[in-house]
Image (cartoon, rainbow, N blue to C red):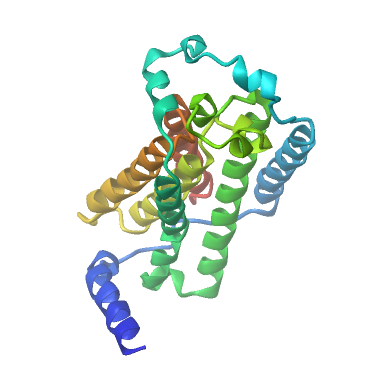
Length: 248
């Protein structure tokens, strides 16, 4: 318990300077009409992707045996078919959870301690997660792209016969981590527009999803093209949601 307390104090000591700048008027506001539209679209996409999900059928043994990596469109994607690492898969999960928790760092800011402001940020965060998840899953269940490890003869057949083996495009780990990291960076930049630390925050936000994508690739779960599109999708959701809520 003492060790945990010391680590917590160390984290606060390191991060506090990032939030010690003077912050003017809270830059965001929520509007019932606007939130209804965003949440409505997000929920509608979720319902649609769940419907498509039911139509995804696992690959058959014949399908798997007939696969040829030479048919993969981009040559730089083909190398990934040689990868398979449960360890890298677990590391990518840990990094994803870390990225999803990054908005909690904003609670250190004095600006977020007011209930109204905290509620506004929570609403924006929920919308970012909802839109990112619904778009990602909608594309996954529509494209049904086969994951790289299915081409690898060293991978257990049980993994290849799972429905999830047809959800390669695009990377949900990368899109989710990018969305939350860039959401955090964008909110920080709007809260403290004159802080020099915003460059550090943006750099960290850009780096963590890259690390997630790297380990998803090494795990044999995603092609580089899956990761690139996932990164871009998450970036757009993470930046645009805060932009839509800026005060005029």
